[in-house]
Length: 368
Ligand code: KG4
Ligand code: ZN
Image 1: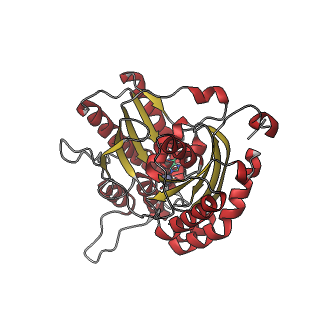
Image 2 (image 1 turned 90 degrees about the vertical axis):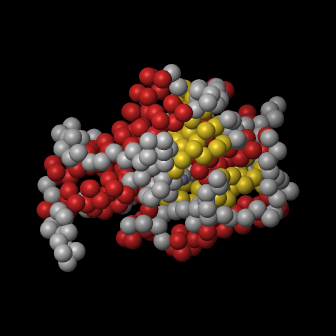
Image 3 (image 1 turned 60 degrees about the vertical axis):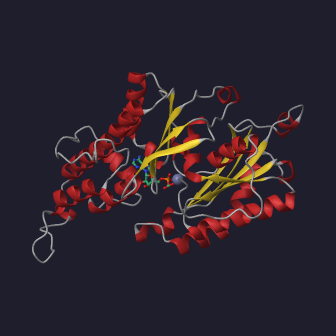
């Protein structure tokens, strides 16, 4: 982080410094956050290169890479924040949901650190932490303004697609979620169908943004589910894209063609049309949720890797303008997995006394 001086930081302040640790999937991350909002450092070691050839995260490879990288990543986060381990007030760790092996590396390390330092340990829900990412700030003055509650929450990432009613930053109720693929997973699979590199979301976003890309070239289905449903589904859209690219399968299950016959223009049209339907489905459910809340939400907190998507960001801004919601969208670096969001939400949990002890477990499933 630019401009931090260790003297200025510790003299005459009672700043609360939380070290965050994140290892739930394929990013090894550590961060130091001051007073819950201000990011003093955020280090993310991506494993994309290790998983690219498999077009998905291989849990065993991810666990080993976390074990090798976590301590150097923590050391760098402390060094960049100009903070020594003894100055850390608490250790927060993403302990659910995620891949069990990767989670165990982070949770075991966080327990060891917290115990050896004699500092509180805070277990943080990774999905809830994505909702917090839009509140992180790098300048002190940004750290002051907080959203009003109740708020509507949206997390769209590689592993999760959920909507939440937020009564506060720490009282969160799930309204609905995906019944099949997560939105980012659908982007990644769509990219594979189109012959684009992994992870596919950014590649589809890039093609869909090209000026000549026509988002109405294909009328892909926008999933609605039952009229009252606040759940999401992306598998029908994925299949529609598969058939548009490869033709319908014959009796033997063989397709008529593959993605190698696509022109650049066709690939851009397919990407834009896919993106329009995927984003359209999310916007539809947000509007539905807004119409259903007992107390109208004042704010909209969104996060997760797919909130980096250009079209989704544009449509969320338009929705906020239309409805007067105070939209909190993370900057691109905090959309994807990071530890600053873990340290940030960890600080809020610490403030309300929700600390963990050494029995904290790594839990692969989402909390309800
Ligand atoms: O939040 P994240 O790092 O991981 C999970 O917690 O799951 O999200 C990664 C996901 C990947 O599926 C990736 O393709 C998607 O976010 N993604 C995007 C974009 N950037 C990342 N999807 C659509 N458009 C993007 N620009
Ligand atoms: Zn995530």
